[in-house]
Image 1: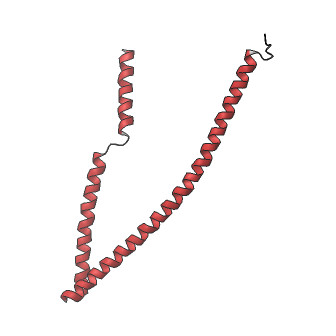
Image 2 (image 1 turned 90 degrees about the horizontal axis):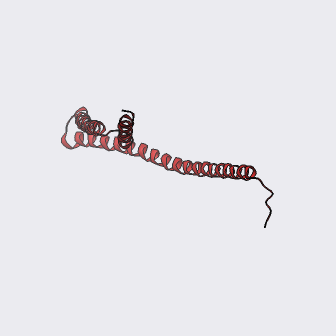
Image 3 (image 1 turned 180 degrees about the vertical axis):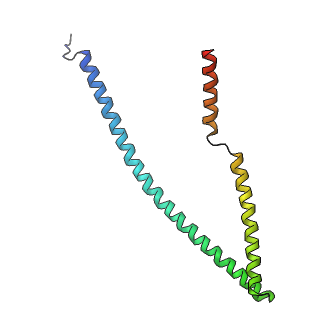
Length: 129
């Protein structure tokens, strides 16, 4: 019959220490992975921000070109070409704002979480009554 030198308390302490070490190691790995993901995402976000700035500048130049083309093509005054472009952009902005507002009003944030909380409250009320 083999003899055991460790007591149950020693085995439990050893098991708890191993579990703590495992958790610490997993947390360290998660931190390293998260840092890598953030760096990678940061580069992508920076590229997208640069693309957005370039797109806005391109749009401004395009609209300026359209305004000057109205002036040159139709013989209108310069201010009339810019006024037409401004009115068209204002209408576009109003339509996009209305669409965005309606979509945001229709969307409920954290829908599943709120439903789960309501179900839990109903269950707790039923259990306590």
